[in-house]
Length: 155
Image (cartoon, rainbow, N blue to C red; front, top):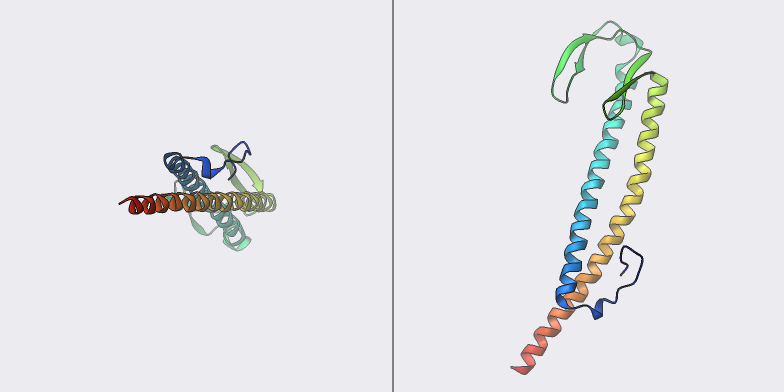
C-alpha cells in the first residue's frame, strides 16, 4: 500500500491496532473525497443549468415578457428581460460580470469541462483509496481470524 509520500508500507509488519488506525484514516479520507466528488457534481449541474437558462430563457422571444428573477436560491421577484444579448455572470466569490450570451455560454462550457476533468481525476483517486482500504481490511480480517484460530487451538 502507498503512503502519502509514495513509500511502501508492509502491512504484515503492522500491529492490529496500527492496521485499525490505517483503516480509520483511509475511511476518513474516502468519506472526504466522496463528499468533494458530490460537491463538484452539484457545481457542474449548476453550470449546466446556467447553460440551459441562457439557451432557453434569454432569447428574443422572451424580450419584454414577465420573468422571475432569482434573488436567492429560494426567493424570486417578478421582472422583465431588458436585454437578450447580455447577461450577468457570477464568476465566483461574489463577483459578477456582464457578458454577451455567447461569451457567457463559452464561460459556462469551460467550467463544465474543467469540472469534468477534476471529477475524472478525483474518481481515480477515490478508486485507488478504495482499493487500499480493501487491502487493509483483508489483512486486518486475516489477522483477526488467525488470532481467533490460535486462541481456539490453545483452549
